[in-house]
Amino acid sequence: MSNISTKRVDDEGPESSILFVGEAPGGSEESGTLTHPEPGPFLGDSGNILMTCIGRNGFSREHVRLANLCHYRPKDNKFEYLIGSKELSDGIKELQDYIARVKPSVICTLGNWPLYFITGKSGKKPGSGILNWRGSILSNSDGIKVIPTIHPAAVLRDRKLYPIFDIKRAIDEQAFRELNLPQREYIVVSSTSGAEISKLEYYVKLLSESDKLAVDIETFGPYLACVGFSPNPNLGICFVWDNSVAIRDAVQRILDSPAKKVFHFGTFDTEYLYLQGFTVNNYWWDTMVAQHVMWPELPRALKYLTSVYTREPYYKDEGKEQIGEDKKVWGAKTDRGKLWIYNCKDACVTREIQECQERELKEKSEWERFFKFEMKELGIASHISRAGLLVDQERRALLEAAVTYKYVKQLDILERLTYVGFNVNSPKQVQAVLYEALKLPIRRKRTGQVTTDSDALFALSALCKEKVGTLRQEKLLAEWQRKFLVVKMIMLIRGDRKMLSSYLHAKTSADGRMRATYKVPATETGRWACEKYVDGTGVNSQTFPREAIEIPDDLDNFVKTKVDVQTEEESENDEAED
Image 1 (spheres, rainbow, N blue to C red):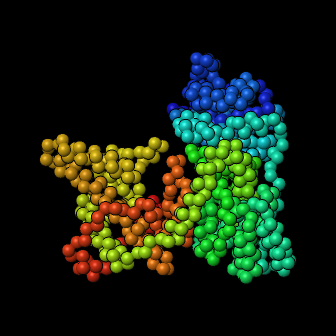
Image 2: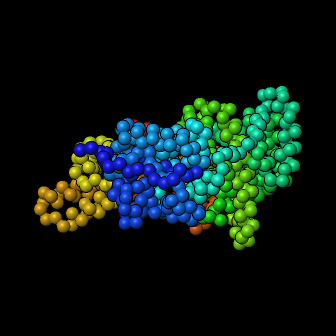
Image 3: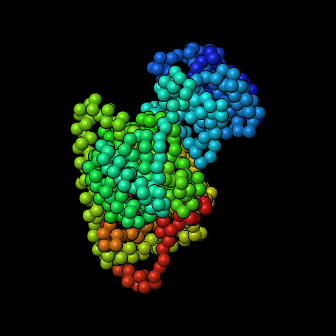
């Protein structure tokens, strides 16, 4: 049986200035609907979402061109069945011919695969990355403007995506053909060039005398890489950090200046600068805080704010080709030239976003009051972060030994129950034990992926407990009791490993204190959040376990054996291999 339908669904609409491109027809598109009896693109519930958004922006179905990459429906609506097929290649060729002939003002690509086939952009692999690129102003190989956004079917599945469905930007952009991307100047200052040193005072004076000054830092983990400044959205200046007296003095004088400092998530930047011996005067605005005040239900990441407040295309992966886009810090393989430009660009877009946010805030006086209140919270959070908690090292060692004792005992029980040793944090190994060896019902995530996460284990534990309470046949009862104990042991061992790796083995600062970075605000409701301190030490202090830890009577004898326990962090390589 073929995985691709033989019923063709043609594109629809006039030769419009705007072209919407989806992936492939679905069931409603193939059969038609009551209001649209003939087959056609974007029918059914997801099509209604798209048409509603188009209608709200002054257009209708009759005004736009609707198309798909492929004219034929794949089995179960899974686009992967079309990859490499003649149907897909023919559809893309037909679409490219239409675009070359008509030359629409803008192409709105809907979903991951249209983004990839029209622009060549993606995430880690083809068919991914739409949440990064959505809202960006891109172009195809012929220079025609492209606005990617999420597919309406994704909005149908998750209504939280509706506010970031970029149909308004696409329709606004069809009014003109030009990309109109920002023209910014980027300047890199270092102490290694005599020419740069001679200009140092000029840049310090220029930045220090600015009214508002966006600030951004980049790091190599514990080492500062550079400090970027932007006095206006069109100019970014990156000071390359080499710990020289000239650069340190220049950066500190700029930070000490009366200029109003603007950060995005300045909680991290200011704390990191503090550890490097810098102070920041007049921390006046934080674009993440302003976003929370105005739109608490929407994303606050810089990449999102850039997509809605500026015309800068997505750039947050630039320079990370060698280290991987998922890395939080820059590494030794980083292209330094790209990093300095990245730093300048971050500062420029932060400065531009601030201007837009300030205009919005001033339109609503109550928002401005909330903003000032939340900005004041940042100082409190910083004080708590820097104070930290003094750790009783003797008590900590005792608790570590007690948890390790319990861990080893439980691990021994698990091995006796399963007759094998395995890593309880390895999804594949746990799946093999639970679903293959013990024949427990497979638990899946909403995406259909097999899982052994905490929710799955809780569900399996409840199932086993129910069976144990209802079965009377001795052999079956013993079998389900064993299954219940295996699931329970996995849960307990995971908990102990988490206790050891996340809390009892957590690094303290040199002064023996446990610190954390407090993020204000972090939730829609305004509650704070917490994570490790900016130097990589400490813990999320808002999640300290509260349950009591029993100290066994024979703990002294156990400690003498010096059992080495592999913790969660130490087993990351095992997890990756699986």
